[in-house]
Image (tube, rainbow, N blue to C red; front, side):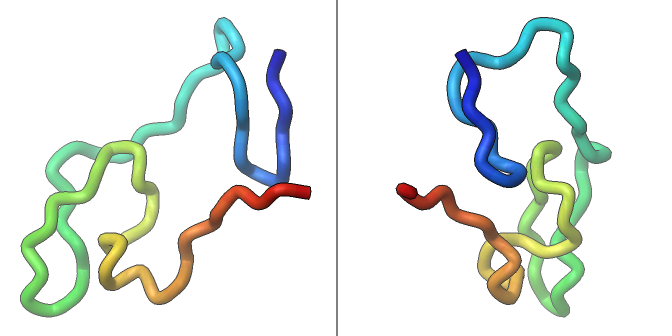
Length: 60
């Protein structure tokens, strides 16, 4: 069973549903930051320089 809240998905992955991945080896765009971004992070910044773009799951 999968429950969706906004863009967050909880539960086991749905079979056949692909995960969107970014290019490997991307680096944070902030000046002087050499953090290599995860293929699952589709933003251009690392978590330190993301300027509050992260979304958190909340209990409802």
